[in-house]
Length: 308
Image (cartoon, rainbow, N blue to C red):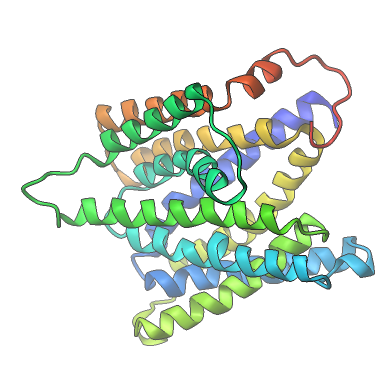
């Protein structure tokens, strides 16, 4: 893969993921949140498992070892099913703000790794984490006189989703799965979809509360096909070629796409405090990953081994 092709794929991935947040906002006009999330991962899970059936070796198509089963359980529960909180939160939170809050995932992942993987934290890393939380404070901006305001509650719910997604990533890493990433993701989405349907039933949503308009169906198709199934194939392609850090930087372009799309397409607004909070979160990430970023900035167009 040429560097130009990688940049194009990187841009396509950021666009697909960035537009997923406005798509959620649009779909929520007609669909209950948890059921909507379930439909997203139903579509994506089926497509990814079909992709795995065509491209993967027979022994890599399903979890066979205990560590693979553990990874699928962690991924399905925390990386997929926990996204119900994002859909619930976006009922009152603008899509751009919801996307910006996702920038906390790498920082919270570090915290979970400290607790579960016995990793160490340098003083500079601790400062980066503190900056991340300072940025989130600017984004959330709680009003002590109105702690139950709908937008504040929605932001807190999305922060819960961010917390669980970060935990899921660490649990999958701790399981040390041997199966292919695409198969792991496909099975996790299939499991997560089942859990979301059960959650939807428990919440009393039901199909009666859904309106399958052309807009709602379009949102499901876009989220399931493009921003999930196809996006993850692109993600794994970039990840295999350029490594985790460079690929993770897409998370800081996604909010830009989501914010611009929300303002242009949905007439949403974004405050300077929210933009400033996002900048501080990114600075925290940069401080936390300063060594890896320094290596990345010194990148030359040489052959890069997967995982470098």
